[in-house]
Image 1 (cartoon, one colour):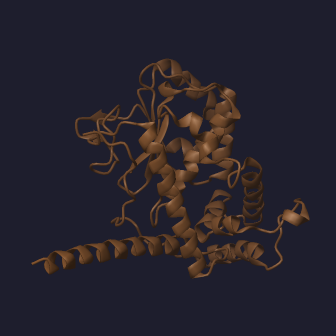
Image 2 (spheres, one colour):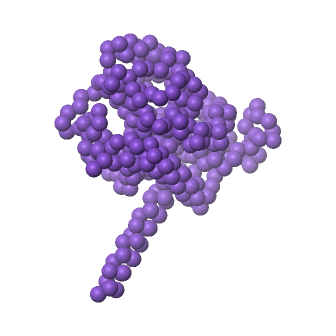
Image 3 (cartoon, one colour):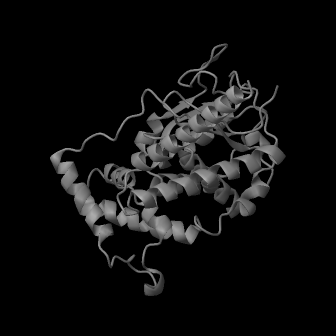
Length: 326
């Protein structure tokens, strides 16, 4: 029987753990960045003063882990991290992350299933599948909007202790690459505004002609990202390495999940899943304190525990109802 909807977020991971403690020097640098964004009258520089104050979505984005990702990406240069964070805050506004890039806007790009989120690897990283052979539109800004929208949804679906995704690209069926210009634009967005978000990139069935394309864009890929890219990985009857049992799709990847993309079913399910989860995370964030520097770990574990409690209550109610009938 085929599956047409995303898998649920893993609730318990052996490798999930609290963020590591910072060294004294790291803590000092983190405190500098946190203080910069936490002052009561903080405003974004070089922005119309009427719109320069941070909104709730932006404060939510400026989590403990987010500040650390930018600090690590800048080799613990606090001033550079602040600059990059402010650049990304402005980019997210200009790009339309919170308003213009809606499910309705990008849905025409999604109808063939050329990108979909399904399952998690052994580290709990959501798997974002890309199938270039299912390209259904001409190159346009909306294609890039769609890729970023899917990345944002992957982030929504990261469980406690998970900050990266697994990118799965399948070049089977005579797939074509985007232009070098589009590829460079996407790479620039990912490397500039989503530092330390790629945990693994598996690129399967890559023909030798497309190897040349990747060689052309390699100079634009930072060295750390290159180390996470595996070309034509070994696929066996046991599935693909580094994936969780029962989480890998069958088509193209030799997994056990009979997932088939059905837009009429999948799209609504993905949008609802992500909107519900984000709403619950923001609610938990407010309950914890609703401020810059709140730990994603605390927000996500609060949502996880809430979900677990609801399931337990439901099971207990069913058990009680069953007993009352005898």
